[in-house]
Length: 116
Length: 114
Image (cartoon, rainbow over all chains, first blue to last red):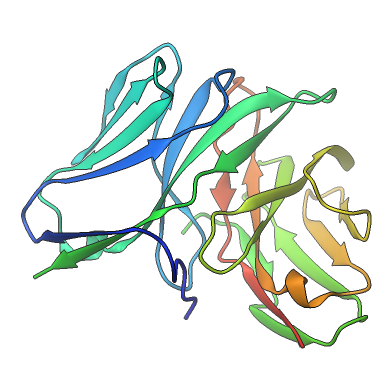
């Protein structure tokens, strides 16, 4: 399978604990933010998104917090499970260029390891 | 599963060769974006195709080119392969109808250049 994230920062948590993964984004004009999960051998999988007019959004077991003042994004995972082990990327999205296309700019990623 | 498929899964080429990677978008999605993911890094935007036209490009040289077909499937072509082109190539499909563009990724093609 694909060995994603050989040199990424790693967060190790115990099963059942809460996890917090942080991300600093680069462009103050970005208006849409997404967290992706990437397991070995797979493409990024959408977890949760948030628009720039919000500062918090909750999903099932996941919460995203957005602080536009310091350009910071965090992903909180409640009751972390072994299946949550993966590399997590934040991505920022904005309308760009002359064509109005929207493309994602990804952060460098964090590996989450869940200890049983 | 996102419904986005890519072929081949793995590919080995030598420097100077050319390669074509293929992507079938999720049903109903008219936009395909291609990304390059080097080992240990996040995906980097290559370009996007919308209704068969290139709709923006990232910081990649012209030897990276693409096509989109009437059924919205897409190809990524890379000429004159270099060792640094070794990476996972991801395509993502989307339907930018609501102003915010959720992109659904395929599993990727792992390209190794020797």
